[in-house]
Length: 367
Image 1: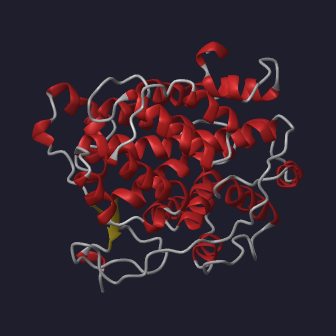
Image 2 (image 1 turned 120 degrees about the vertical axis):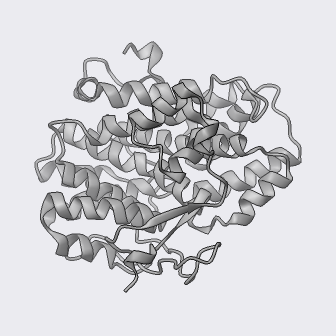
Image 3 (image 1 turned 30 degrees about the vertical axis):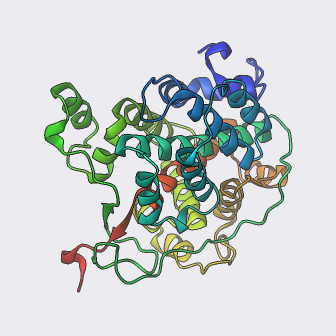
């Protein structure tokens, strides 16, 4: 991929001859589909969420994340954006997703509906905010790998999480992090499978998404879901580089920072299975709000956890010292890229899971 068609390479000023550029070329699928997600999100022409409004909101989200170059890029294309009740509702939703996704409730969705947002528009709006959060952390990580420093010095610790005993619909909710298999129910109706075309059903089936309320909800904007899924696979399912268990560890760390019990349950379970160290993973899950996430872990996992947690706050605050601690544990540039991308992707994933629905404990898991 040329730098002309790689927005993040251009904004991060990545030298095409650098180790970082070579590592990103090795992770070609993640690089291409990150760009592909951007092109779909900011190339669609529809009334659900007009392009000028998309660019204007993306500029605001980038500003909240302290990403000046990304903000300028979006602002340049935001001419013609309107500023009415619909946009104010979107901005309030975006601010919650950016800074406090765990505080989202069904009322946020109701407010968007009242302001005139369609179900497809709400999904695209959530995807946009979550995607720019992903882009921002990629850029922060790339700058660190380029040898630059980040401006923010915010301390990263475990975040808060939901503690209500029941979900919005009355199911048994989770009040602690767990490695159990959980269910997830949407606050906005998933698109019924019969409403997808034959071709769209084939796309859902190709990724195993047909029976999932979550993915059929995101399937209200299916081209974007397709690119997002391919980005996910390009980050987490590639050979070489960072061990798969440590990519899953990073996903779990981000979920602890953001308070996403569902995502943590899936990826902690994978990290446990792959690393064959259930006790270390459970120790991470048990950390209380406001406490250090890496306490009591091995030196290598301490370095990974500290870096991933710091990259996950808004704005990102990972440091060169944390990066050098990772290098001291033997991580090379490709492994560091895998860690940055695994961490950044869950800035995207958590923000969708936390703001479009909530987890529940299936009846057959209740003893």
